[in-house]
Amino acid sequence: MAKQERAVRTRHAILSSAARIFEERGYQAATVSEILATANVTKGALYFHFPSKEHLAEGVLHAQDLGVPVPDRACKVQQMVDTVVLHAHRLQTDPMVRAGVRLSLDQQAQGLDRSGPFLRWSEVGIELLDKAKAQGELLPHVVSAETADVLVGAFAGVQAMSQALCNYQDLPPRVSALLRHVLPSVVVPSVLASVDLTATRGAAVYAELQALHPELQALHPQPQTLNPQPQPAPAG
Image (cartoon, rainbow, N blue to C red):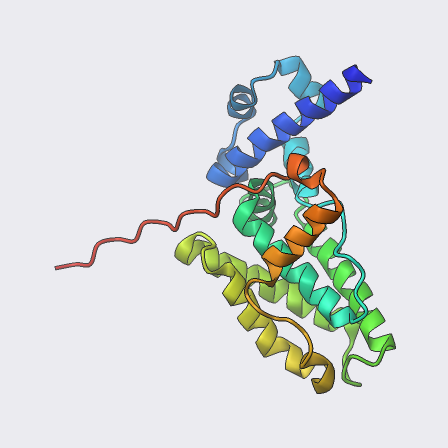
């Protein structure tokens, strides 16, 4: 059992180091030797868990998932919103999520299958939208697959813009604004009126999950929110 726990810790240390390097440098510029140096593990241990840089990147892409879903809600639209805003909160606070998102959008990552996170999020959205539709929460014209793809694509664009402008400092209000613009064309007005779309909702959902699953703090520690990128001084 101790050997198994040590292997889990080693794997997590390698993935955490890989996430930092991939987030800072991108897939193309990252090197296994740099990841090995920052992970403080032997070369044999690294290659035992991850035979190549591609396997390391795939591990980071997979590790960005929290592992526990948002608690079941009576209102499935609220459950879908909570899933979206929780991911936005974790983008601000979890390096593994930021690295996974960077890899997903990295067009220089040749040979790496970047489709997984997009397909996974679409599947989650379709499942929740289907349930919402079955409960009469959606407008009659809504096609779950179309709406899920729109939300996933729009979120990807909003988070990329937030990262470029201020290193995710304004991501929660941007995501809140996105949902306020999209959901009125999807959700029955009387249902939407009761849905919490506030910018602080993501942090509240994460706190709720931590209370339900105390092990999350060890597996996904939440560092301080990132500092904004320095802005160039005005000319003159």
